[in-house]
Image 1: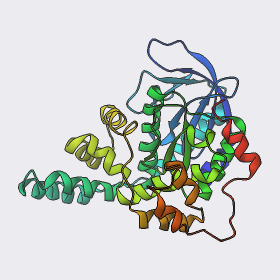
Image 2: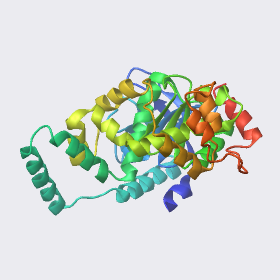
Image 3: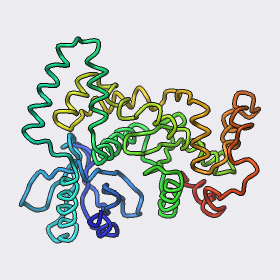
Length: 336
């Protein structure tokens, strides 16, 4: 949206406290695609907050005190002199708020009636039906906010995502090339890869450090995109919290920290489910990326991935590389 593009280069000084018992520290904050990045004075990212989930504790008072939704112990203080940043946050939150669905009274009445009818049809049918309905009505702006919140919970366990000034733009270009919103490289925590709501793909550092061909890392992203087409990541997140999570999301638009943590504990380090081969090959063809490098990365002998090798949709075709050599070398050093 126009408001987001207007403020993408805006930075400001602030004081950040990661927890109730932690000391405040000087940081630099900047605004990105629906998120706020908190970095130290050496420009190393410390945290990412969703602008849609940002709350102010003291409206009208200064210094302005903000925290992520559901986590008042983590705070950010912005001085009254940072007028441009405070105005930007206010305008962006207003723009994001207008983008959300706003159910009216009639819709609320219909929703209550619908839930009552569904409750009468039995406990075995209700959870799955409620889950499917919730997934279908959650807007994209909320999916992005949930994905950023989930990434924040994962980073608390796995450590901050790898990032440098140079690789931020490279990962952005790579994400655009592979038709996802964001690619995040983690040092540990995630076993291989993971797709989060809001089109965020997590990659273990091995995909960029251990291979000479960027098509391997691209293949991991494509495989996660194919899995997301088979099983909606939002459905997996809500399923981790049970029927209460679906009901809370449907009625309040919120999800608890316990559900986020439950998903992280269950899915982050677990083996990824298999993907239908025809679906996966179709994704490689759509993205114009060869499947052979990824196939050999999964199995160096190629025996268990022979279908991806023999039916490579890009075999014999002129290829547009995922990244140029310079960008790939820089990306391979993203974790230091």
